[in-house]
Image (cartoon, rainbow, N blue to C red; front, side):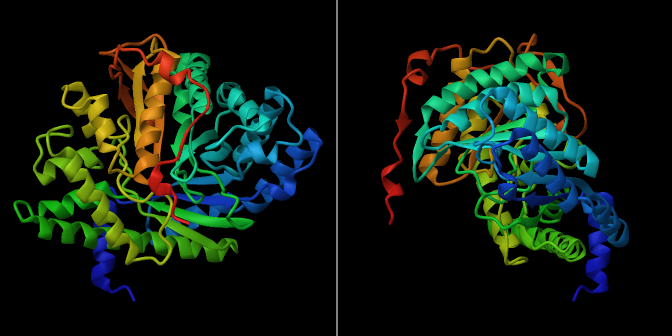
Amino acid sequence: MININEVRETNRMIEKENLDVRTITMGISLLDCVCNDLGLLCENIYHKITEKAGNLVRTGEEISKEYGIPIVNKRISVTPVSLVGASACKTEGDFVKIAEALDRAAKKVGVNFIGGYTALVSKKMTTADETLIRSIPSALSETERVCSSVNVGSTKTGMDMDAVLLLGKMIKRTAERTKDMDSFGCAKLVIFCNAPDDNPFMAGAFHGVTEGDAVIHVGVSGPGVVKTALEKVRGADFETVCETIKKTAFKITRIGQLVANQASERLGIPFGIIDLSLAPTPAVGDSIAEIFRELGLECAGAPGTTAALALLNDQVKKGGVMASSYVGGLSGAFIPVSEDQGMIDAVETGALSLEKLEAMTCVCSVGLDMVAIPGETKETTIAGILADEMAIGMVNQKTTAVRIIPVIGKGVGESAEFGGLFGRAPIMPVSRFSCDDFVSRTGRIPAPIHSFKN
């Protein structure tokens, strides 16, 4: 039972500390839509999504109004499209038609984004996988709400370097095709290693093939709540700090569990997982970087930043798992540059570099997220950055991801403006040294020795 003191505390967190439920995401299987006729396939996809998710937005708004809990986004994830379209799609244009059907369905039901324009290629690309990957620039530039992801590696299988090099080219091409919007198309594309099947957060969400026909996932947030809690134990020892973060994460997750249960019951769709990630926004006070300062660092990027992030990530997970039996997705602390004002400030003052960000991703829940780089950056350099981050995930048995944006026509010292939750991204310098010969080798980097656990 929730007592009156907990109700008051929750109201304060919502009103003054930027607490919100970041998303209700409905995962929908499209496997029963598969057929050889592309037109019929697109029709099946549109009807399945609009039927299953027709009440999603209204239900989210009702729960938000009834309980006074902000629910920022309502989203949909679907079965990886490379699987769904494999028999019907013979060209890149065929896959783009599926993207357009997804976009129409998303607009019809009123969700913010729809994810699942996805390929899973950690060992080798099928013909359908490669065709979908090559279609990504067109799909993301010609649709409004479609998000894309590609998983190129895992601890069990290694890393497909052919896919990594191809994606370096596709990221650059997507940037070119959306250059009038500061290359915003790249903000809707995530490259993964060890991608989870049940991630509710865009742009990397897809409905895993291990999931049921439909499922409700909820992603909660609350960096501002954690920061405020830490203000009350300023100067305390690490044990006190850890206990404070754990208790706060527990309270945040309880709110997510309430929303998830209500959405599941009202929509008649099974509850999946709570993703208890601390996802910042550009709003003042809603920042992971501000938590670092509260922990005693001058700014993000100072010595000790990686240790502080490791502490934060671990305590968030420990507190969350006590509040829900089904914690999943990414869960932990996100460090997107453009979506966190404190991280933006750290980049602009020179405290935070791409290399320091990479070190931090060894212990965070995602990876290089919403990082803008000069538009002139070579495709092979982008592929090298992808490979480095995927290697961290592969060797450390964790999910890592890259959402990187080469902003065409802009260089270091300038910034890209995306607006809303996507924020503003200062252009970060990249290494001027070449990795061309390395990333141009064909084949797969084998799985690490500790993958053999059967």
